[in-house]
Length: 221
Image (cartoon, rainbow, N blue to C red; front, side, top):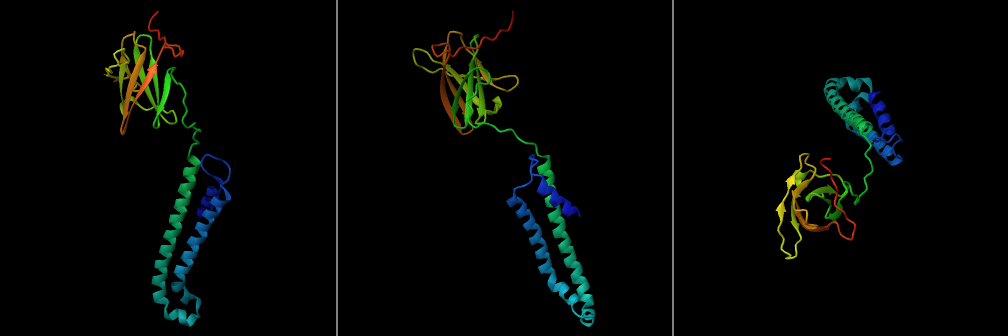
């Protein structure tokens, strides 16, 4: 009874989706049940066959049959118990699994008002505050935030001499971005970002004709 109920539960539940399983999936589960019991039957037949004979022949082998039948009953019980446990566990996992939101792949969305650039499987958003502070955010291809401790970043203002003077960055208190404090006169930056196995250098320009403005963040009246 327990196994029948677990099988019905598996047919009626599929993840967080309340609709029944597809026919091919339901048929696959039914085949697993049928094949299991067929295997039990074929494996047990050599032992149980003497029981199907006449009374005289069955009594002659009664002792041997009892011991061997007991062993096969244990094997069959273990198979049924294992299959029932697997189906029950699968049903519970599918019923209790929460539905995940559909995430847009490769979304180039500005989350904090900066400029977004993509490289490899990452999105980088760079924010320039009017005080001169530069903040670097890193996200994956689905725009999920990557903690600052998992990547390194260096910032270099672009100057007329063309010489890069990269400065290291620090992690924010909440570990959501890395930042460096530079002079307010700088408007163009080269950002070097490093993750395990990847390093790239990007260029960002603020407060020019492209209307990419720096963020005015007020800290006092």
